[in-house]
Image (cartoon, rainbow, N blue to C red; front, side, top):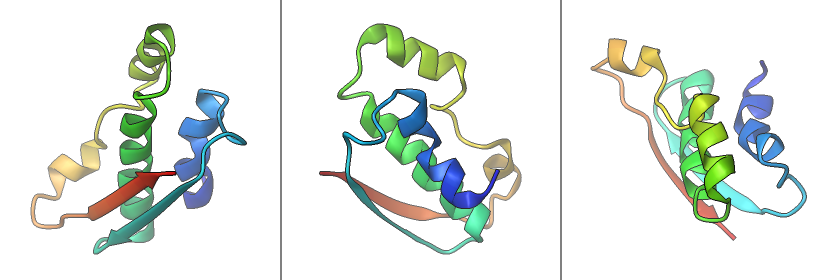
Length: 85
């Protein structure tokens, strides 16, 4: 999956692609790591606007967990900030 598709996947998953605007900044790490960090932050932010059933589907779809690679690379950290507008 391309990095931009990975970032937008949570919005597709909860059918909010045309309803949510967001701005994200990620520093350090590679493109894939930054995309994963933004995807996780966006997924967690979406929990504020979805119902409990959708939140459970997101959990089962593993949208609310960190990538395994993050745990394997303890020396590299991706800092990110997401603002849902």
